[in-house]
Length: 223
Image 1: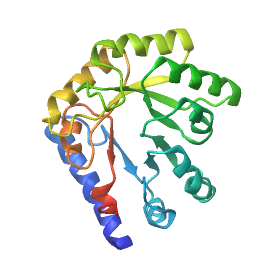
Image 2 (image 1 turned 90 degrees about the horizontal axis):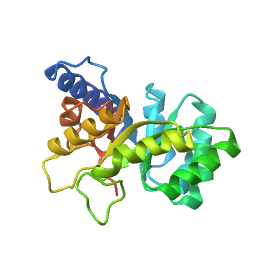
Image 3 (image 1 turned 135 degrees about the horizontal axis):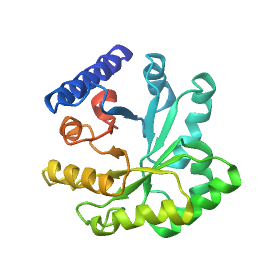
Image 4 (image 1 turned 90 degrees about the vertical axis):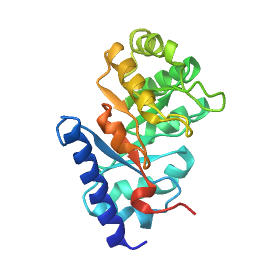
């Protein structure tokens, strides 16, 4: 895929987001776009940065460490989201590199992040990941525990939890899962909701997403 194709795809995604917001009677900029750059090398990401986009998502700490420090030297205002599962032994590295961590899903990780933030004096924003389909193979807090867990993280550990994130089961209609995630975030008093990917981000915007995560619709299929 050429640089021109990627930029055209980026603009098409943003236009579709604005259209979905209008249809839901939300402001055109109600949801922000996180471009998912996992598995793509720096030379594929750089044209999107050069076009002015600044929010990107990565799945693995180690992969991000291999490409983003150099990219951030050129684009220091780039904003990096961790959207893949996080092991507690990577908490220090994640706090050092990422601006947003969207995968807070258990007490042990919460304590590790709190310790890492205190040590580094750096406080990335956090999202509680909700396992809306209660899938055994997927990370995330069960919906029935999400509000209590979010409140505990904020009140007991003083963590900067700002929202909730969810990835619906692939075989399910996504809208009910999006609605549930938005409802839980509201119940917890959290203003941000991260949900929606390349196949359903317009639905997510209509259902109240404030962040969507789109990669293949911009970069093309992963190898």
